[in-house]
Image 1: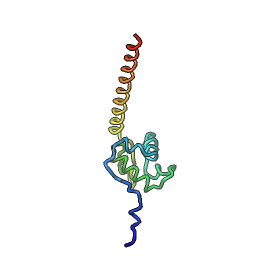
Image 2: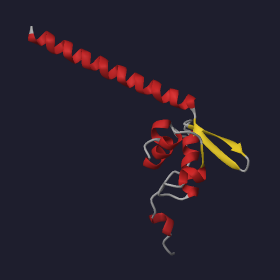
Image 3: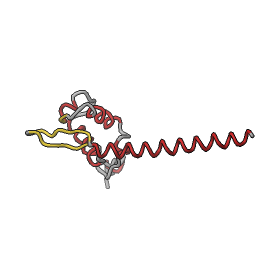
Image 4: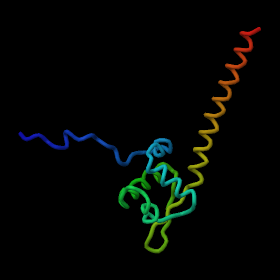
Length: 118
């Protein structure tokens, strides 16, 4: 029986239930988010200066949309994408929580060292 080519290929999950942090782990998706921070854009506009094809940009936008970071609307025959404020609020809440935990840990360490010096 001949060997299957697909048996030698790495498995890549294209569409999955993405969380915002996982979605932003990809450099291209971060670039898309940075561009959308300047205002809404269509896929063609987003793809213009990226080193990937328009279909690839569409796939990245689908991941960002599933993660709740972007939303789209029809404008004539095009889809225009923009950042989703609700998704950004969720990211900000995560960052605030992480920052609060880091500061609490730092405070605890400083207070413990001050107690050791007494």
